Structure formats: structure tokens, C-alpha cells
Length: 239
Image 1 (cartoon, helix red, strand yellow):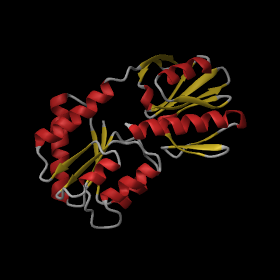
Image 2 (tube, one colour):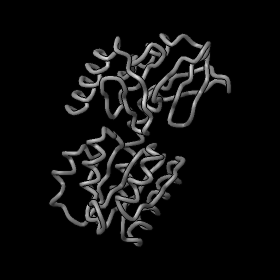
Image 3 (cartoon, helix red, strand yellow):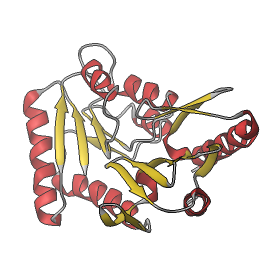
Image 4 (cartoon, rainbow, N blue to C red):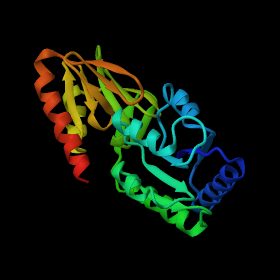
């Protein structure tokens, strides 16, 4: 699990990171944590790396955007990364839920409450059935939510996942069906199937993913893609 902490008070950042590491040891879960002292520092890194499993945000950041403003900006860009607000003030709680926050904790953070939030996140990820795929590297188990898009290249498919690219020999239609069954796969071009959960923006000829990748949208598929995009994010908003 990869977690980013946005906290401008170094002692609080160390405390939160220590609790995260303790949770990871108890659960025997792999963990990578990075601390950002400001929203601007995080946004700079976000341009090159958007593969975070959780953002822990202090609302009252001193410089630049505060945590709530950052959350709104990420949501406006179509980013669906889970958010956990940690702050000394509870009056922002309604706004936190407006941006789909996973939870809201008051400082000082209590170990038990943080662990419950992390357990919930882990449990939700565990509900997802992995796809078992035979690739050139061997058999791999990929969670559909980690797949950004699949592209046909000659006689092979390139599966572009958050962990990297996997090459396999399957008809594109078969991978399209697998992703459609997970609820978010749509063909945007003759040779490309994309996961809607990673799409931030769609225009007349190009769509943009949450890692900055742009993919072509064919005229033939445009109407279907726009409808699927609107339906998917309408459903997410209802949840």
C-alpha cells in the first residue's frame, strides 16, 4: 500500500507515519509512506506519480492550498484516490464528506481509530477478484482496479497497470469482456480498451488518464465512451 501524508508540522507527520508503520507490521502489509509539507509539493509530485492508495491530509496547511482545497482540485480532475482528513478542527467535517472522504479524524490521532480506517480500506481492496493472466513473465494476478488500459500491439496485448506493463497473448475482445465485467471497461479505439476509473477527462478525440497518459478516442467509439464516462461517474457520485 502506498500512502502520502500531507502535513506541515513535522512532529505530527512523524507520529502519523509511526502509526502507519505499526499498522503495517501488525497486518503484515507492505507499506510505502511519503510525507509532503504542502499541497504544492504534493501536486508537483502528482504530475509524475498518481499511484497512491491513500492520501492523509491535514486541512489547515499553512502555505498555498489547504487540504480541503487540494481535495476539491483532485476531485475536479477526476482523481478517485481515497482521502483521509486529519485535523484539529471539526467544523470542516461536512465539506470532507462532500469530496467523498473515506473518514475524518481529529488530532491527536488515536491509534485504534486510524487502524479501523486502514482496515476498512484494506478490506474493500480485498473484495476485488483478481484476474489471473498468463503473460510473457509468467502467470500474474492483477486487480482490475489497477489496470489503466489495454492496447493491442501486433499479435500481443500490452496491459498497462499501476505496477507496470504486462505483455500477453489474448484477443483484445477477451480482455475487454474481463474489464467490462468488473464494471469499468470500455473500448475507446479499435485497439484500446480503457478502465473508466482511471479516466479524468474525455474530449472529441482524446481522453486523459489519472497518471497523465493520453489515449485516442475514435469517432466511431466517441458516443459510447462519453455515455459510459457520464454513467460511471454519475454512479460513483451516488455512492
